[in-house]
Image 1 (cartoon, protein in one colour):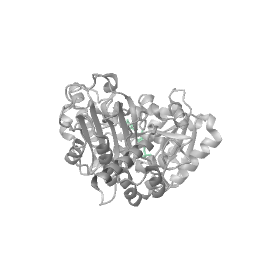
Image 2 (image 1 turned 90 degrees about the horizontal axis):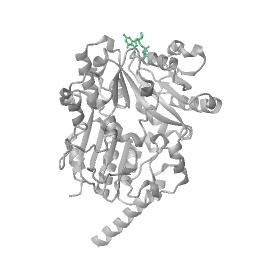
Image 3 (image 1 turned 90 degrees about the vertical axis):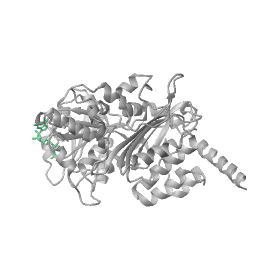
Image 4 (image 1 turned 45 degrees about the vertical axis):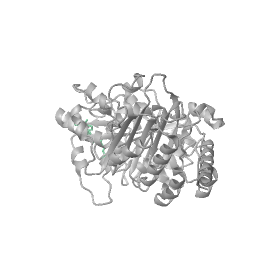
Length: 471
Ligand SMILES: Nc1nc2c(ncn2[C@@H]2O[C@H](COP(=O)(O)OP(=O)(O)OP(=O)(O)O)[C@@H](O)[C@H]2O)c(=O)[nH]1
């Protein structure tokens, strides 16, 4: 009886995997046709069957815990079928995604968002930009401060009847749709400046959840400005229970961080701040600036939600250049929780502040812990091959049961039966993954995962992950 049940479960599971042969696509396209959308638990079941698979049980939980996300549940189990085997015609478009990229510029009050925006708008980058400014209150002060408005080159629209992350999401959607419908030919990138107190999470989710937006725009990334002088006091600020610390949230959700106002601090303080930021968000790149002056590539074309850039995100630029990245510091049988550990040593003496997060000084290693805000990063770097069912179940359960606490998660996995690297990312419980390039013949199969969020228990994560490895 038990054997029969096991075999029928096995069949169901195979069919679940067989139905999940979807290639990956940009996360911003969650609501596009390339994504599996479930408007109800029933439709989810009819797609995946009624197996006790982790991803199935996850849905029910998420639906009740996070109703916003439950409207569009987009996640799929790891698939053992290569990307090329998938025949959906919609996927043909994926590589030529011509939807308009949207960059969200956030940062605490006074960190220099408008200054950066002015710098970008005046710069000679050949891009035509539309700007959406979100300002509290009736008067659009920032709008009038943005230089290019007079120049008339860019479209600047104001959202000033509330905060984007709280009350005006609907307005944002309408504004973007209006921009697209009336001026599509006049711009090729949208910049959104949030208020200084915005929590980026709901803004990010807007781009996944609003089906109206998906055909037209894709989220390019979140750039967070940090006021190097005042950030420590904002990060340390104690909030009442249940109230988020916006400064911490803005860093946690960032794909890129601009350490602005470095003219106001000494190098030592800046190093400490870098370590602090790194402990919150280990993946985001960091760059110093004065008055928002930074390479435009750093602001436009972030690709923070692009699966093809995951390795770069979690291992650094150097990783993508070094094809044989699996060198010395990767553990053979144990997990190393400090991703990029090796990179710290490479840059131990550099005097720059580091273009990439991994380029912090080695003395910052001990900063890799969760601060009072409870928000931090945990990385796992571990060589080995994962059992498909086990990793599927573990990751599915982990993301569902901690949907509120895991803000972002990215990884590159080596999975038994999959010749390619499996790359994935998640924003809370919205999961997306697919096969990437083949593993090299001599390449060490090193799994790398980074979690950013609250209440992350490093030991439990490592233990759970290691239990998924083939013995
Ligand atoms: N010293 C110094 N001042 C700067 C720098 N960047 C911006 N500022 C100044 O800081 C102040 C605030 O800059 P804004 O660009 O308005 O900051 P913001 O993030 O848009 O501010 P809010 O809209 O209030 O959230 C302005 O007076 C800027 O001139 C910098 O790198 N160094």
